[in-house]
Image 1 (cartoon, rainbow, N blue to C red):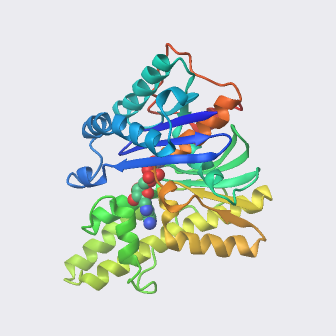
Image 2: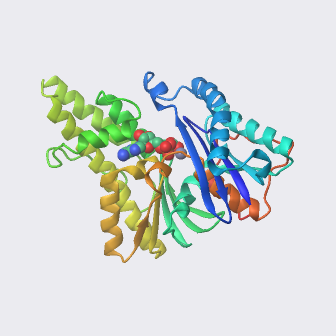
Length: 342
Ligand code: KG4
Ligand code: ZN
């Protein structure tokens, strides 16, 4: 089955073709990051307008790369949520329109299920069951994954997501959007011993996260340095380092706990923050100690992309799932735990 995947939930237009016989045969991405950077964050209306401009040419590009024409498609999968509703609508309406014109099935996919299963696109993919750490701009969750659609939420952030915290810390440090990679770059030249920031919610049992206190702590540290006339380049790097260490350490502590609690030996890490090198280092060490193994999507599939949507869509479509052709889905809030086996 040849499935076209469409992702438009936020600021990346992603399109890919997944063939259940030959795997991923094409994928293309247009990132709007530069456009939103000027505003310091994603402007929803601009995002929707840009998806409208980019989507059809990207679909054509993917078809050309895969050496296919539209009529050779067997189904279409699109991100139905969670995300920005206007942005989601661009993908959803295009998918439904194309599917109707071609007389093929169409299916709305959960964006986070895409991130969760993105490592399945790699040559050495994890078998079920595994623990997954989902860390993106909108989500921080630990999930026990028993199979496709069998997700048990172990813990999640009670306030800011880890990526959001990185983006806010970046703003405080005067860095550009999206902040995660910039904070990481600055942190690399920071002194890890100069400041120690708190590791929120690690001193009590449980697998929930909280990052808003850390945000306040970071702001206070910056203000104190500023007031003392000591906020030079090195101090900013040292603050970035202390912040990154605190987030990474917190995530690593909870991952260790999740592996120990479940007795599972596989850890999948996905979502934008999974690109963070310090996080990968720390999780590798935690896994090694437990005879466990960490799995990641390749770099460009850590952040939003069409490939993960095409993949998840293909798994569910093959199992017979599809949308009602008359009902287009665009769901801004959609808890992962409500998903079911196909
Ligand atoms: O998964 P994603 O592309 O979009 C969402 O669905 O949210 O994740 C984007 C998030 C942003 O908050 C970005 O700052 C963060 O991932 N991020 C990073 C790194 N690369 C991206 N955070 C820390 N370190 C990085 N290297
Ligand atoms: Zn995402």
